[in-house]
Image (cartoon, rainbow, N blue to C red; front, side, top):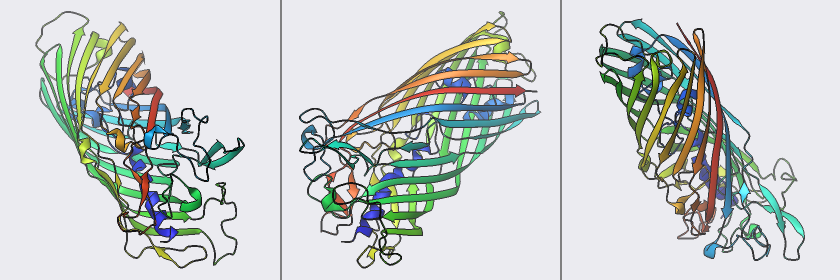
Length: 521
C-alpha cells in the first residue's frame, strides 16, 4: 500500500493537539484551571467573588454589582513535558536496524522532552454599568493553556557497537510540533433582580487556528519503529474554524451580608473545520538519518505533496459547571442584611479577608475520539510510484473521563483600599486511562498552588500572581492502546500500525507568572 495513505493518517494522530490550546475552561481536559491574575493567586477560585471585568466570561451575573472597568492581563506559562516510550514488558523501544532503544544498555529507558518556549496567554475585558440594575460586558481571552510545543524529530542513540548516531525520536508518531491559537470573544449581560440576587448570560464566539506536525507509517511493520521497513511519512496539518458558538450562564446571590453564593455553566459547540495537509514521504535515509534531498528529480519525482482542502476535523468541547460559596468578613461590623439600593462590591476596600470554596465539573467523557476524516478519493503522489489514496478514517481514540474538582482560596487585606495578599490551591480528579495517554493533553489528576497580591494605585488595581501545577504521572508500563496511522491495507489492520505507539510514561509540570491591571470608573 502506498506511503501516501499513511501520511494522512499520521497527521490525524496529532490533530488532537488542536485542543491543547483549545477552548474550554474550569476543570476540562483542554486546560486547567481559569485564566486571570486574581484567580491564579486564589487557587482558581472566583465564581462567587467575581469582582473584576473577567466576570463577563467567568460569571456574567456578577457584573451587575461592580463598577464599570477595563482589565488587561497576561500569564507567562512555562509548560514542561517528558515522554518515556516503552514497549511490551516495559522495555525501551528500538528505532530499528538493531539499534537499542534510548537509555543505557540494560538500564532504564531515556525520557524525551519537549522544547517549548514560554507561552504568553493574554486576557482583555471590559464592563459597563448602564443602569443601577443592568450591566454589559465583553471579554476576549483564550484557554488557560500553553498553545505551542516542539518535540525533537530525532535524538542521539548508541548503536549496537557503541557508536553514537542520530535516529528518529520515539514519540514522533504522537507529536513533534503544535502551534495553536484559540480565542473566545464573549459578549455578556448581567441583571440584578434585587440587591441580593443577579442573573447573567453571555454569547461566546470562538475562533481557532491550528497547526500540527507528526509522523505516520507507510507499512505496518512487525518490529517496533523499524524505519527501514515502514518508511516514515511526516505530516503537517493546518485548520481554521472562524465560528465556534457557545454560551455562558451565571447566578450570583448574597442571602446575608457576609455570604456570597454563585453558579456558572458553559456550553460550546465542537470545533468543526476543513483541513489542509502537507506530506513528506521517504523522510529518513536507510540508516535513520534525515533525507536532505527529498526531490532528486523535480518536478516529477518529489516526496512533498500539498493539499489545501483534504478533509474535516471535529473535536468535542466538554460542557462545564461550577458552584461556589464565599465568606467575606467586613472590616467593620454591621448588619448582616445587605443595604438596599444599587450595590457595588469592592473587596479590597470593604473586607478584612475572604475565603471561597468552589466545586467544578467537566463533561470530559464527551471526548472519546478526535475525529479526522478525509474526502474519498484524496490522493497523494509517491516518489517513483503511482498516486495513492489517503485512508478516509483517521480518528484517534482518547476515551476521556468526567473530571471533578475542588478549589479553595482567599484574600487578606493588609492595608484597606491599598494592598491585599492572596493564596489558594486546587485539586482535580484523573480524566484519562493511561492506556490512551497522549502528549497533546495530560489528564492525570492535577494539584495546583498559587499566591499573589494586589496594589491599588488611584483607580487602578495592579495584580501579580504565581501558580504551580503538579500533574499525576501517567504510566501504562508499555501497554499502550493508541496505534499510528499506516498506509498498509492488510485486512484487519484498518490502516493502523501493528504495535501501539503510546506505551510508556508521560510527565508534565506547569509554572506561570501572571500580571494584570484593572481600571475602574
